[in-house]
Length: 149
Image 1 (tube, rainbow, N blue to C red):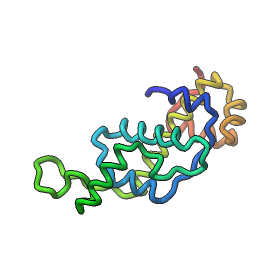
Image 2: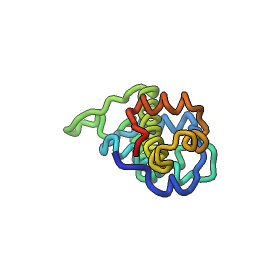
Image 3: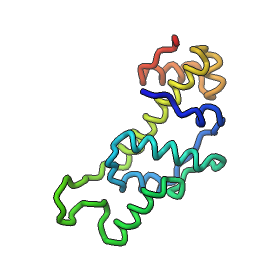
């Protein structure tokens, strides 16, 4: 898996919260680019909200907000669903699933970059991430990330 874009690692961007409607927008979008598009959208939202503590739908890429607005105006919850056009109809996953998936992707990328930047120095990694040693080890185990670089 590729490492976090350098702007995230070098910009010292602080941890962000999420507004409930941010996840609502993520859940309503059809994600034709699948997980890669989701990760890219979240990274772009983080970059757009650089100094703000919370991510809102306004931080999502414009094309996502426009597509959701068009779907809302036309009375469709998800683009292409139930409009008589051929293709796969999109079934929304539960919000909790989207949230867990998005957080897991971001956590995994962050931890890989953290281990790379610290060259496996656990004490330094804990200090940078603001985690206890046991919590860092638990996350590294969860995502099967080795500390030896």
